[in-house]
Length: 78
Image 1 (cartoon, rainbow, N blue to C red):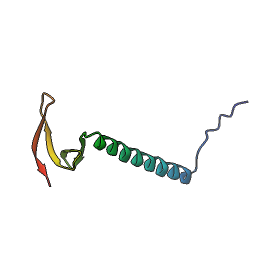
Image 2: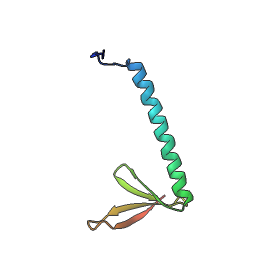
Image 3: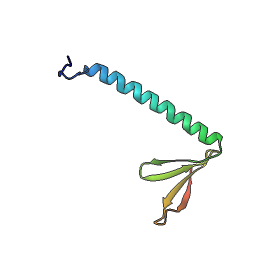
Image 4: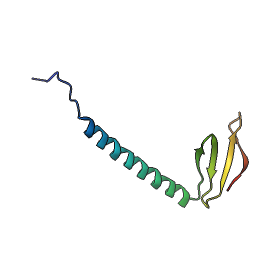
């Protein structure tokens, strides 16, 4: 016989699960960034409305994406 009652988790369990998922995601992102930098590849992210390219050596540049998809360096961020 199958139950038709939904399996509802208590809010506390959902919050604990959400914190575990968030921690695992942050760990994975940190590992991915470290791997890319070790390969000498830049990473891209945003600071507010600015698109940033961070080189493996730590230099940061503000970028603009042109309509043709190419990147234009606006300037170095310090």
